[in-house]
Image (cartoon, rainbow, N blue to C red):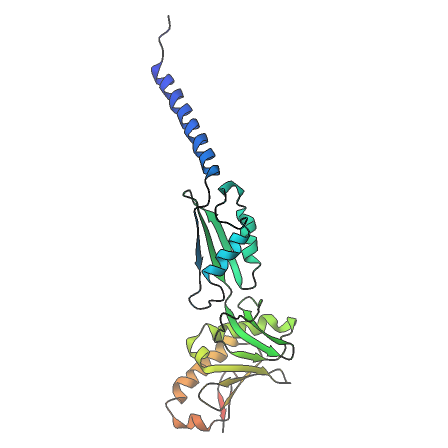
Length: 240
């Protein structure tokens, strides 16, 4: 008569128990309802959206209530609904084991406001349009004129450089393009115009301009300047 191998029997029982517990927890997890919605938005600088707006949008697509079984929640669909929002750069939606539906939303970052005869809108760092908002008006420079598709990438590079530099962001108020294709900046606190030229050598030109500002603001002559020319990257030419 063969002896029972209790080690093997114990192993089989443990495996069977694990399978049972896994199946049970999976069934219970499917039956679990969404307990609450947790929303995270990068709204510190650009609060186009708030938690209430995102929460309402999610609930509208959860059969009008947050009390929905987890298995019925289409996370990808909710992400897509958020991503097509005119103020959303990207989003992430997921559920935790305890029944919390999490939505992380990254808003678009405006770098310029465009104003022309067709209306007004913002552009973000990717060159995507952002409509005006009733909730928030970001303080960014204004570009007067029509942005052509062929020049969009180069212009956005200039706009983004200004937005990401505190000195330039404070100093430059609005931008226009002359008939010759030169970008002309108006500045805060002074009456001179900055002749930037075309969209080439952006970093060098702005480096020269910042050096000029640091030097010229120590001298009262800066108030008498009519123009500051940055076209020639080797030097800054000031005219009275």
